[in-house]
Every structure is written in structure tokens, then in C-alpha cells.
Length: 176
Image 1: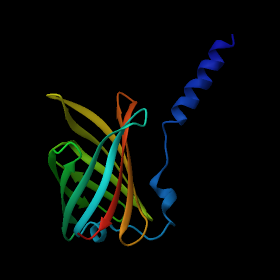
Image 2: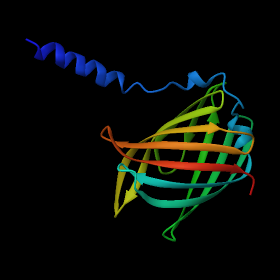
Image 3: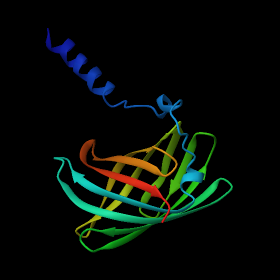
């Protein structure tokens, strides 16, 4: 008899844990992030990928250039990885309204959905990640927080089939 209520409680608690934080809770945080302003011109970023145990597996530096024309932006990211390899991602970003964005890149399945309030921006997207000759679809829950006019911090959680694979942490600095 106790099994059924316990199963229902576990299901409810499990589902409530999936809800996460809404970007709207940051609406009063400053400085206010305007991605067309922050991602305009040259930027440099440093980051790492850590597996689900927390072990850092790869580090990288990214040199970026952003350009905007109206509500359309292009962000070119050139990655230099700690193993000596390089890669590039070109984001095409469209501002839909005061808070919503969509982004596209060649290694993103469909569109990335972005929501910004206050100093925070959340992106959700599926990255097509090549590993050992295979390509995996990995879900990203990507949070960016503007700290001041020059510095932004980014933490992304990577998941496959609902299981955490690892995280990416990045520090951005506006300017070359």
C-alpha cells in the first residue's frame, strides 16, 4: 500500500528537479546584458571541459569577433585547444524581441533558443559533437552572466538521454 504513494512522491520530486531556474529571476540584476553590444567587436575567452566526475579533460582559448546589423549578428569563434587542435564555430544570431533570441551554427541541430533578462542569458541547444569518428547529439543548457562591461562568465551543462556528461566553463573578456 505504501509503494504507490512513495512512487508518486518520487515522480513528483524528480520532475520538479527538472524544472530548473528561469532567466526571468535575473530581471533586476545589473549590469544589463545586451548581447548586440557585448558581442560586438573583438573578444577573448578561456575555458575548459570537465567530465561528469569534475576532471578537466580539455582546455581552450577562443578569439572571437562579433558584428551586428540591426537585430542580426554574426559571432565568429576561433578555438585553440590544449591538445594543439583548432576549430571554428560561426553563430548567426537573431534578436526576436526584448528578451528572446535564436542562434544557428553548422554544428548545432536546428536552432538555439536564447532568453535574456537582467545580466543573464540562457541558451538551450543540441550540439552535433564529433568524437572518434562518430557524431553525437548533446543537449546544452548554457548560462552566461555579465559581471561588468568587460567580463562575462559562462557555465554550460552537457546532457545525453537526460544524463549529465560534463560541463563547460568559460570566462569572456571584451577586447583583443
